[in-house]
Amino acid sequence: MLDEANRFHPNIKLVLQIGRSVLFLDVLIQNSNGALITSVYHEEATESYAVPFGSDHLGHIFRNTVDTDITRAVRYSTTLFQFEEEIRQMKLMFLYNR
Image 1 (tube, rainbow, N blue to C red):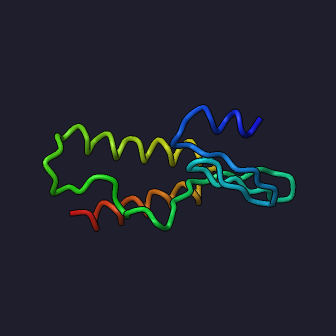
Image 2 (image 1 turned 135 degrees about the vertical axis):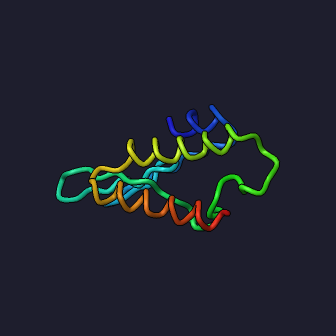
């Protein structure tokens, strides 16, 4: 089944993981005493910003980046603390990206 799923899209490769925490695309899923906790996962190898503000992109591209990041934080953060931490990281990212 995993091999079939991996043939579906060439840029997305799924791997079998068993443990108290697993990564699925950009979501970290943790088992905390039987309760599933989810949060946004950021790869360490990725840049700290998506689109440089100094680039020649149109304004809606920057707005979409912010909207998408906020939506991801809302959807993936199980706790208010995780959500607030993700928003704090976004603020730092956008300040750094000036």
